[in-house]
Length: 272
Image 1: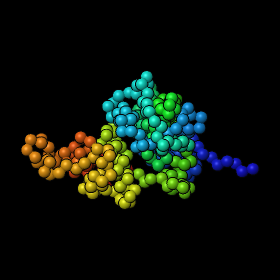
Image 2 (image 1 turned 180 degrees about the vertical axis):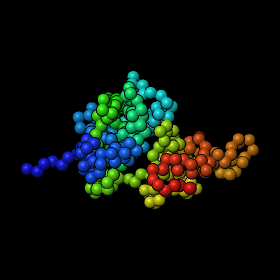
Image 3 (image 1 turned 90 degrees about the horizontal axis):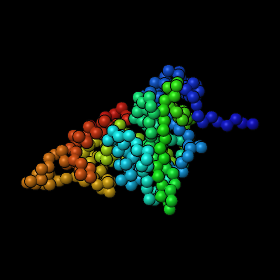
Image 4 (image 1 turned 180 degrees about the horizontal axis):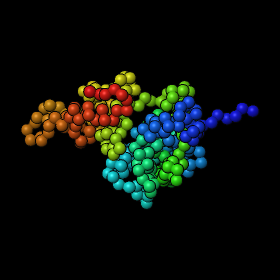
């Protein structure tokens, strides 16, 4: 009888699977190149949704905790009136590098409400409510006595993704160029979302000016527009070059946009 293929590993087993030392694997875990996963088998939840598929209001509620430096209010779960058609059920959800660092620096544990898909996209998990509504599912995670984050494991699919041995899937994971900062705000999410889309479309890291034009075409629904020189120089406007790129009321200059692209970049190349 064939033994089922192992899907989860401890530290030693994962190092053996990759053919490296435990110390080398620990280094990649510490740096966030390899993420810790949480199995959804037996997890009390009903479905997952990518953050970008949620209404903008809910995206702000999900990400606003880190952005404002507040703690999750467990008495007020985030709710939505309609389950998105894009809801799905992954085998694992993953901790971002930022959340892992947050947990590693906390001796009392943290309530986490934002995770990642296998291909690095931010996601949330939900419980069904009445009349097709839903409310967010949060997980309380803490370091155990051995310094390991509770409920997490090292998954085969993450090791395969890291090592390049991933089995070809019907839907290839989207390439990830950028990730949001530790304390994301609305404009950082827009930049990250469309920087990754640009990278997927063209296979290269966007330059600020080309990226601004790309945003003008693709991100209008998110409130993005480019202010004209006439609008900026109009008497009494109180506008400057720092307001050229308008992210739903938040202005940025081309230089600031370039700095943001470099800051959110996950690759060795730099956007100039």
